[in-house]
Length: 551
Image 1 (cartoon, rainbow, N blue to C red):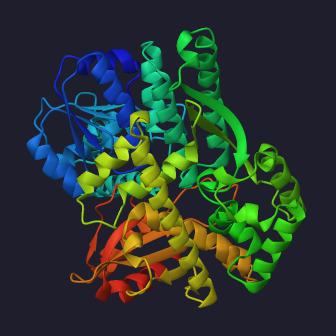
Image 2 (tube, rainbow, N blue to C red):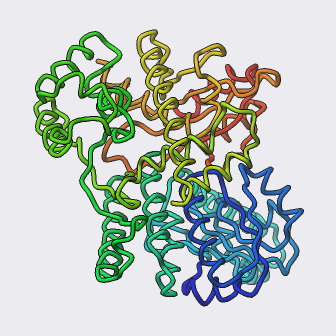
């Protein structure tokens, strides 16, 4: 059931309870969790925080914690968890479509979801229509025909028609996976309604929305709309604090709306490294080719920036160059057909020294969340990623930025390798790329967020480099080694590359059908249905089934 008054129907209910907070491992969910934690601390609500990486984790955790609020769910929870009748689930989730059982359950499932999103939920009658009236009609027609067998045949055909119709309605509703309004933004608006919103909460909601943009989860217009909503809140908070004494404090926090560059981590890196490892500029120049490298040198020359300045850390560049750097880059970028080099975003200033763009924090938190450099548990990485979102933990945030740089370099090198060695194959209805065991940094891509970034970057690079017009409109499936001992790979599917795309992904359903029809050994454990685990031996028949299904 959709919650219409989030304060009355959700917060006032849980504020006097002990709550178990289940959070999925993505940055938007972490930010929503931070906002809720801050609210719970305000009202001294007891809670247990449980990170859950997938459905198996959720089932295990549910056995230990019976009272819960969940930040992840896009299936029928009652069937999955088999809870007691007095259990109540509050679900704040960006995954769409919302399961119809969760929508129409009035007692145990409460959905904290913005209904102005394009949900398209089928009507109750179309899915769960009570057939009592139909039965009465069947009895009447049976009486009229004096016990002949014909009415029962008609009834059977009618029932079959109804079942087929329902299946078609459900298939149309569930065939595409996409994302709605950021969970962090929903939680911030709860804090705002209760007049308990702070700048920290506002910054977390900014990061949550930016995460959806960085990982390409929402259409550009949706991002612009949500940014406009946040901009109004930023103006309100900045205006409110103009005359306060703490606005001059050395450790004060200031959020600003900006049109900044689409150069990843450039303020914490050298400008040269950032241009080379940003998806937008790398694909525009085709930096994996010799001509691309020449183009980059021409671009730097056109800007008139000395190579010594461009190759050193941004903080060490001359102030005279940094002052109008954005304008200089934008002017030269327009000459090289990069008209979208600037993007609407937010920056945060902690005192006078520390400045971060929202995308910087997203990359840092994602790198900490999926860190593979140390033998640490996913729960440890989860807590570190959560900690880096607090302004009291800037050291951890800088550590995350260093990890993110290594990750982005690995992605750029892998993309260049795949393009140059023709690893991307056209399989008919989709493109396919398989990273082999032994590929540098392949362990990094066994994680969903890192593999998603690689997949998006690789598809964009392929579209920029290929001359085949048909291949430019195809989706991409990518496989990477997951567990060598078990012989499993992680498989991810993304929709075709397009700036105007609605970001709807049909691979979740396609993967299920292909696995079912070939009895392939798969594990559909991730909250994103377009990410699955597959036995290496079954890869051939699984791909053949997908080709047949999507042709």
